Length: 339
Image (cartoon, rainbow, N blue to C red; front, side):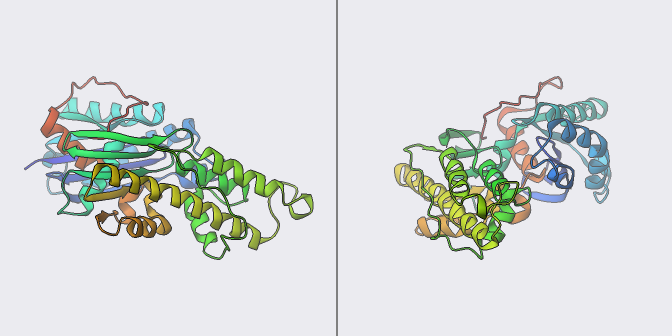
């Protein structure tokens, strides 16, 4: 039995969790920075790193406070070493390495992307590889085949913007709040998606959202100055809702069709949708419809966004397959591992 302390600081969420044997989440704490970055319309890396520095210790304490024995119950430490914002990753890895050295515990650096893949494994106790994963977030849009624990192949990725980033940018063009995903989903519910039809990009073995983002800009521009306020935002809430609805339809269709094509190509029988954008109800519905004959797993909302429980699950498997890392391992902002 292995009890892991897991730490996640790759972007704008400071998170810590205690996970036993990779699947039993004993505690999970997330300190969000959304309020800090909302006024800027996106994550400011320096502010994010400073916020991690301020709250990481208390976040870890909160994760440990309900655990019998506290630190003495911990057998190993897992921490996100990449990909992500360099300064943010350094805060988490330095803390984990220092704690591991002080308490003479094994430590393992984990891919944030592998964490998202394993969030589905946490959510469904019967799920085992092989399966396809559609990983959709603010920084990543990838389709991955987890062939076995420790072995993953990327089948498709975005050629430009991640889908979550496209949601944020579309929201900004419509005068909506950050982060864009939740607010576009909410506003789109009252919109007529057919009023401003937007193109659905289709690429073999890839995704692309830059064209969709540009199409939104052109739709807003072509409304004419009389329909826009001084900031270039549509004045009519019904217009905003319609554009948001059309954007969501086009983005979701591309994702569902891309995952479906990968499933058809590989003969997959199980698929999962993970990452922050997996919280989108329209995407969940579209994937289940497109892949109705397959087993579809989508984690609950608390496992879709960045969290440390998923890092604990991925870290447990990495310890089993690769063993612990040297305490002096480096953070890697460009790390592209999925297992």
